[in-house]
Length: 557
Image (cartoon, rainbow, N blue to C red; front, side, top):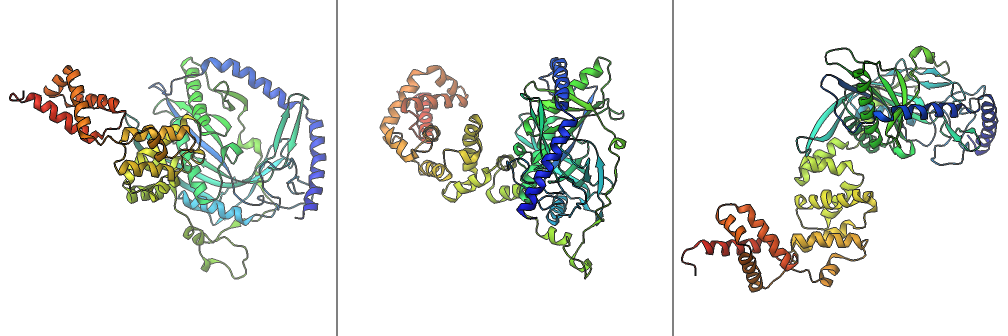
């Protein structure tokens, strides 16, 4: 579609939007006032506890809308660009002008098939499109094209991990079944103007391609749901089928939550809509579980509702009663034939053009997150927990491997610096890996000095902090030289310091002589204070043990 055609379509759509707003003014403000009042009523239900009482079990299922990474929309040639001027990417079809017909985007079909293969789904060789009817001001046609009867992929499984165990330091693997993956259109966007009491419509997003991934209710809490979505996010990014940037709306989650007594049918569910943050997802689900538990324990009934999560109050608020299938009036899409994909090249008819071949897409699948974790463990000898942490933070694997390329230090000695020292400071200041003031090469230089025995591990951590505070402007070598932090090389000086510590701490020495060797670490700490961390811990331990042992010798003067 030419730029002039798109511009003309945008003008027509603007006039249609203006008429729509005249017909239904201020509807958004009525719904918002109801939500605010409900938020006030529900505020006292906000709970800090994450666990559900023994007599009730929680069940969580997810519906995830992933925006397909493509240059154009699902059924039109309009471009897809975030933050473009309002209504600048709208074709005649996007605005639902009479006489316009959908043309399916092959790239979007391939993306859905690749995602299905990565999630171990069965790919339907023939899938169907349907119309799902509902009235939104930002949905010009009055219906959405989706795949309700026969979606493109079914029956998969997503394996995800989260930290468990008594100390929450063990990787626990869990599985959630994927019911189906379906292709569908996105709607436009409503922009509510509180000052002027009006709602504006932006149709740039209308018709953008989505994959809706429906997950079975196999999860029990917000933490599990957030971990599953994070794993899916990594898979989509590895495949390149979705950029999965939740802050830009490229990945939106609807959570279906219910509670029931063990052994009984599932309870009445509520749906918390359009959650765009993993942290908010976990909080919304945990709050909704506790809200339903409180209602049932008071003898009430949970209503089948669609709700939203209010991040400011930490509560869910009602939006409307939940629709049923009959409310959507599903019907076959008359303007689209069945979508056919082929297993291999041999099954493609000679006359077919623009086909999607499953076998070719399967052969081109990249290394998925689970495979990458296994490779990191096998290649570098690190623990599974470390590989889980590396992949869960964007860019951390690349940072870790960049450090390894420029240092002779063993990977198992490097991993702690990346996942503990570096990651702790990044989280403390709410930074991502790309914003780290300490580059991989700068950290590698520090570790080389430590490996060569020029500084102690205690000093290395102090230097790391100084490098961070200087925003990477000062190297490790400069800081060590300026502050005279090199190891004490005078053995006689170390002997004198150790003797002073032994003489001034008789109770600790007595404990060590009585068999409590852990107290020796306390004496070593005193020596490090005296030397400002510049003593080699191995040498200090040997000197202290020698001096304490000599006290035990009766022949010692």
